[in-house]
Amino acid sequence: MDSTEATGRLLEAAEDLFYAHGVQAVGMDAVRERSGVSLKRLYQCFPAKNDLVEAYLLRRDERWRGSLREFVHARGDDPLAVFAWLKNWFAEPGFRGCAFINSFGEFGEPAPGIAAAIRKHKDEVRAYLRSLLPGRDTADQLFALVEGATVLAAITGDPGEADTAREAAKVLLAAQG
Amino acid sequence: MDSTEATGRLLEAAEDLFYAHGVQAVGMDAVRERSGVSLKRLYQCFPAKNDLVEAYLLRRDERWRGSLREFVHARGDDPLAVFAWLKNWFAEPGFRGCAFINSFGEFGEPAPGIAAAIRKHKDEVRAYLRSLLPGRDTADQLFALVEGATVLAAITGDPGEADTAREAAKVLLAAQG
DNA sequence: CACGGCGGAGAACGTGCGTTCTCCAAGGCT
DNA sequence: AGCCTTGGAGAACGCACGTTCTCCGCCGTG
Image (tube, rainbow over all chains, first blue to last red; front, side, top):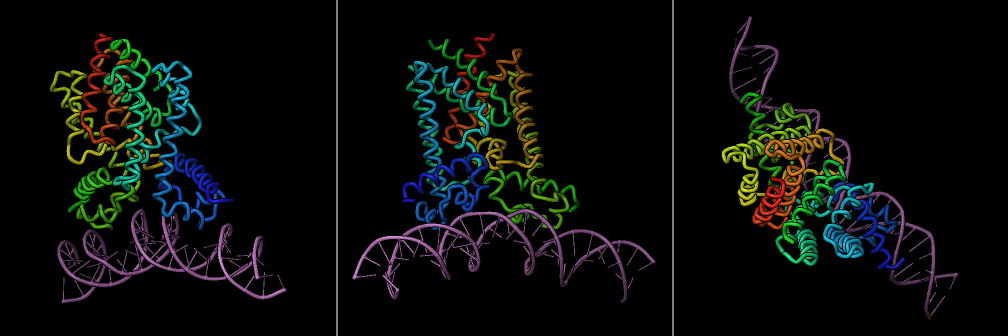
């Protein structure tokens, strides 16, 4: 197993474990066990846990936004499709809310790289929503709905929060034109 | 110092520290130091850290909702006043987002009491918003906006997220009547 | 075959922290 | 005064975990 494959397996394991149980609750040994990569190589690829966490967040950002973009694009870039995607996500087994919001809660004073990854994700999502809509204000309003629905679905466990947000988005879009 | 005063001082210290730095980042020794209560009595009042965390959340829920209710009531129970209150909150020094959302992120699989306290808070806030509005659906939509604005203000540090949510709320209220 | 290094497995180390224990001073009661 | 209880200060314990170290088998090369 070469170093790039090890990195891939580590990121895979890290994403599964960190998202499911939280970053702090998962030890490096659990990542090693799940990935099948030795501890020595783990620390060659990621000199410290913070580096692994940062890479996990960056990778999850890419995949998460890629999945959303693809789904919405297949529906003619209809902004309302965002909420259909959300509902699917909320209903997935193992859904535990937004990894970035959760990480923000975990790290009171996060390492700079982690804080930057969290902000980057939210900035990119906001920019994506703006790209879907003519009006910047409406996009930002939908963004707040997306975040709110995600948080509430995570806490209550009810995927229906996506529908509530979708109805609100429909009204906002109609009002804006 | 009797036991009830000790409990009060402990809760005060716990709220300051837990909210500012996160629960996991604050040791029981820090709570002891800040409260001026001995470790022995601390463990008499709260047999384990989880009990203190749970009490902290329950107390914060009461105070937070009390502050919001009072502010909004003084403005004729206008639902839009909720967003004015939010903006003040976001602009407070030391604002770090919603304590309950942060705690949800910190505890992957929270102790039952902590999970219950988090859900209770969100349920109570939702019920409060419903009490302000004739339409249950509109109230739930505003709730999503409130949560989204809070999360985004915490991550970006921009209190202006409250204004974005307020504009959306205005549209939703006008559409509903 | 001897040898040198690469990599894996897992022990070991240091630290932080939740929780408990030890010791001692102060104060009320007889 | 003598004694017993209460409570405080802080040491001590146990454990978890991030990180590093040790040992050893495996491989290619002379």
